[in-house]
Length: 335
Image 1 (cartoon, rainbow, N blue to C red):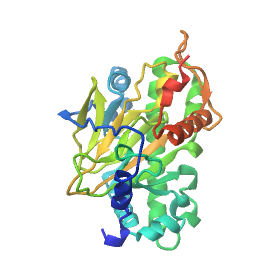
Image 2: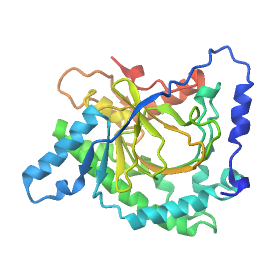
Image 3: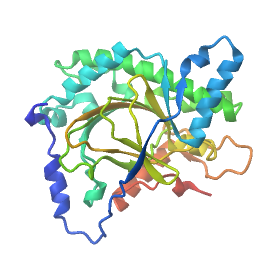
Image 4: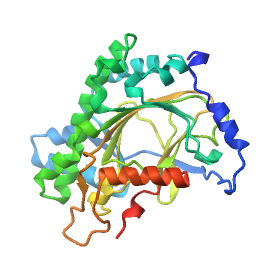
């Protein structure tokens, strides 16, 4: 990684350290008591000729979504060759000069680094990313002349992740509802996002967040990560570190599925811790509905949340981040 490709994370973080604030600095409670092995599900089970095996696989997905909010899958149908090609293009992209990443309009001008809304150091993320609308991935104007091969790989990778996300959504919907139209409402490809992440090595590790604690504001997320590690999630009121599995993708439930399922499926707080010596790469696919889709409970019982649209939810998050410096999330929509 060339020196001029790195964003000015240290300068921005240093400015926060010296910025006057009326807020009491929050201590990072980053003590991890154990490394966990997420529930591991073999997706071959969904294609089994044996109905019992298919049902067992679906049940495992739903159970993990309820008990953990996270699980990992193998035999997911995305080839190691495609993942490796995508990773090579990702590394090449982030190796571009910082000025080009920030100012050349790459990938729908979606480059971001650090946390512009942070008001004190505990809200800062030591990372850079491209957060690309899936609807723009095929747009040649987003790549310039230098990244033509990136576009070809991104199209293939995004399509594969989209298809896989619909598999999980269908399983989770069918477990709680007979609403055939729900899948179409949930899986609106044009509103989905693909996020390319790079977490530079950080001399402040293990105290520095690569990505601050948060829940995802979608239906579900599929994560393809390297083997560096750093992902942690909240389980039984404590942070646990996720052990990387080279053959697996990670899936986690987002806020919208928690609301839709009436809290049956759990959107779990998670974060990334920066590594002192090694940079980390990951790619996340976010399954989202259209912005005017109404998020209502699938339950015939009393709903925990009032109905809201995805657009309304995103607007509320942006308003809270601007005013408070952090996301509030679903608690804003409790009845």
